[in-house]
Image 1 (cartoon, rainbow, N blue to C red):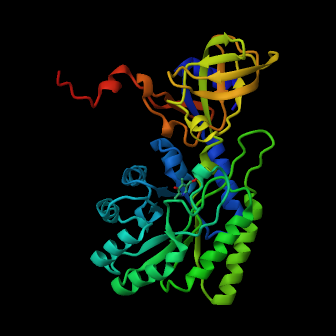
Image 2: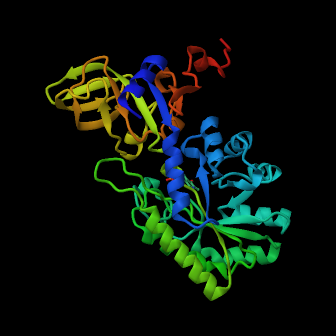
Image 3: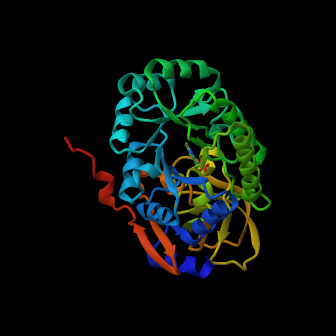
Length: 399
Ligand SMILES: *Cc1c(COP(=O)(O)O)cnc(C)c1O
């Protein structure tokens, strides 16, 4: 999107506002589908961005949906996804939530022995399931967002394979898919291949296996000089490995992936206004009309977002510390070169599509921002900005 289009949106809808350029989502999706074989399927990880319009758009592209809560499942069904195109991959939910997903007839992925046993005892082979394996490969990114390591709460340890088999043998539970999601931002395609080899090794223990779900881990560049996961290269290697395995073993599995960030990160911008320029003895702060109540990634896991001043793109570059207006330290970025910022200027945060609005809150009793979808050159409001009444909506006054 151009600065002019973004400024127009800031003007029309006010700030702070999230903007999603859906053309970018299409571009990313097609990059994936053109890199892998026809049979490989992509389940958009809804938790990255769940606005119903984004879900509908992703569905129209042909994607399936990965959901981590029953409400995401319901949103997906409401957006028009067929149940067989939804995978429910929860963590630490009770059997009741799993049963609710069963009633919606979606694929279910179980990630601990306790629920596997409860499910098996109650339903036996009547409802096929996936099992989420933790292969213990430490893969990429920040420790906080890596899910495959030994301390992780996710999945059933690969060392518990015998225990899984015991549950299968005694309850008759029908495992139709194996899943692993080792983390976010894996730079090296070899990590996926290593994961795939582990899957192949496991396959012989699961006679009814149809699907291998490799989760996500597709990296997107956040700062200049960073690389995106080379999906062309990954696609080639993975398809080759699948083909060779099929030749050796006679087993054909459908391969699934669950990209979240890869599809929607780049599409998103958070537009904010510079409220105050504050010179201290140590730095120049730009205080903007947002904070970690709207974009928590920089504070939560030190993520980097490019910040640009679209009101003064030709101004002299100066060094700023960009902070929010929340009463709690909420530094978006230290020592950033930004074209001179004047009070009232509009700044953009790039790569704000994934885990941006989704993690927003009403901390400090501030309002959640609006969301705008940019489609075919037109801006559509897809979520109204919170209003004051929203802060009181579920409160019960007893005094
Ligand atoms: C979060 C999540 C994803 C998506 O991860 P990204 O890094 O956004 O691509 C995929 N699968 C599962 C099970 C997840 O929890």
